[in-house]
Length: 118
Image (cartoon, rainbow, N blue to C red):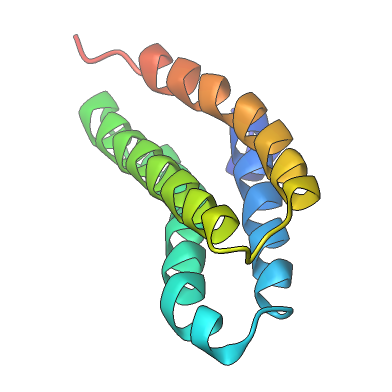
């Protein structure tokens, strides 16, 4: 069995998380303490929940955490939309996030679907 960090879905979640983590350092204090901290918690939670689910024994337990990861994925997209509307991130930055999101979303959904609960 592969290690969780070898999975594409996990690697993409980590890449998205790191991208937002380093962007946070460029934001002013107001943004960091409001939108920024929430966004980082959400984006970090994607990979964390994939990892926690991957370590669970039953398919039902695994799937529950993968669904939490998808919820955090959707929350992350919400924070990024807010950041763009509030002129915190540029259209160029959005394009970079969008590329990762467009790849991660389908992989995360496929990963969840592959975890059958019979």
